[in-house]
Length: 376
Image (tube, rainbow, N blue to C red):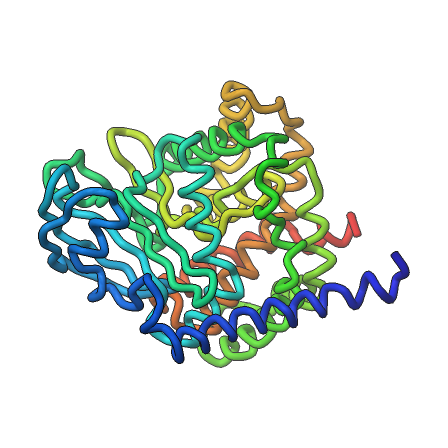
């Protein structure tokens, strides 16, 4: 392909993707009442859920709910052979947040994950029903309520309650099992793409720079530590996304993890990607642990991962190569957290800034920019 064509193609791809997202949201606003899937959680009545679950639901009541990149709620159900409560996800309330979801294909990805991939994995919530309207982008996911009464107790960590090395080891063992399951088995899932291969990655560097500008007057965190990454995002993202590939969770920060019966599990499979494990490992350990705990244990945790990956049927990864790629892949933790903290609205501000602080420390401690420059 001529160079000018290969450079223009992603721009056309981005324009088409943006247009599709805006068209979905506009179509929903104009013609949404004629669509089968409800727009709001309040529309999930007994009749609709009976059809989606394939079981007779006689009553539905709201237990609690919140909002982020999607609208979420716990519902109490009665009926024939239905769970006493479920966790549901639907589109975000505001058009701006919905557009962020459209950019990341969040709804499409998570619905397809539960339809096509989740059955091959353990330690994920049970899916009772899933629906997606490709015309409007409306979706419904009805999942196992991990906080239900009578169920084994689940613990839900977050960034403000960092993980100790033992719990971090449980997570890297879980990631190893996920990665081994799909190692070099990607052909049946062409819809799972690399982060750098997505047309929307054309926007990432600009978003990171805009976020850094917003943050400079609001925090003492040296957000410009990652300036080289922001300015060269497409090149460095392509570097860390080189093969070999597997399927990754894509967003395994502590808020998307749970612990039950001495094992770790993963929530929110809306950012599933293909890529090299180092990207997932660096993001997870950097966001989940204090800097001191990570620095003191990261080499050993990578060894735990290597052993668990091989034991689960994956390859035996070279220790030094994984370490080098882990150092480079720390760029993703920085980009993700600077955009989240700087753009706002996606996460509690305290959590977002704590994650960003850890990511910036990691860039410095791992000498990530030097490691990237040496390989470009």
